[in-house]
Structures are given as C-alpha cells and as structure tokens.
Length: 80
Image 1 (cartoon, rainbow, N blue to C red):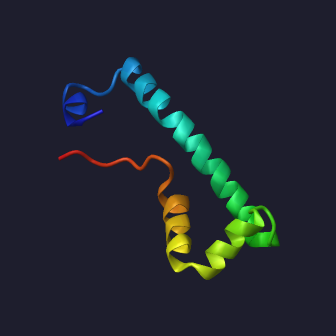
Image 2: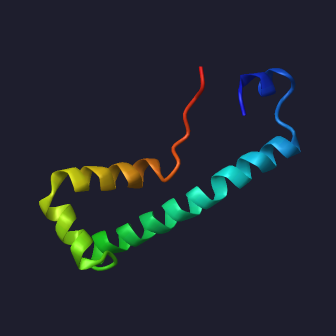
C-alpha cells in the first residue's frame, strides 16, 4: 500500500487483506524464531548446540542473528 491509497480516502478491505496475506507467513516465522531464541536466552536451551556455539564464537553470526530477531524475515520499507 502506498501514499495514494491514503490520499484517496484510505485502504479498502481488499487492500488490507492483500497486506495481511503478504505479511502473515513472514510474521509467524519471525515470531516463532523470536520465541525459540527467547527460550534459549533464559534457559540456555531452545537453540541447537551448533547455533549457540556459533553465536558465542563468531561475531558476524551474532550480529546477523540479532538483526533477524529485530527486523524479521521480511522487513518493510517506506517507498519514497
């Protein structure tokens, strides 16, 4: 959805359904990943041992992990 949609009175139900279809799966995947990572942070479990080891030993992997947890599978961008 873009600016003109809102300039013309707002999104229609069809517009909203289209956005929901596009966003639902990436949101569910991201939230499941965040939940699993959160469990691992609290208990030391939740993440496979190899992933935990990589997160502890390889800074780039840790940064990518944090970025994914923060931004998700499909980050949205505002179009100018």
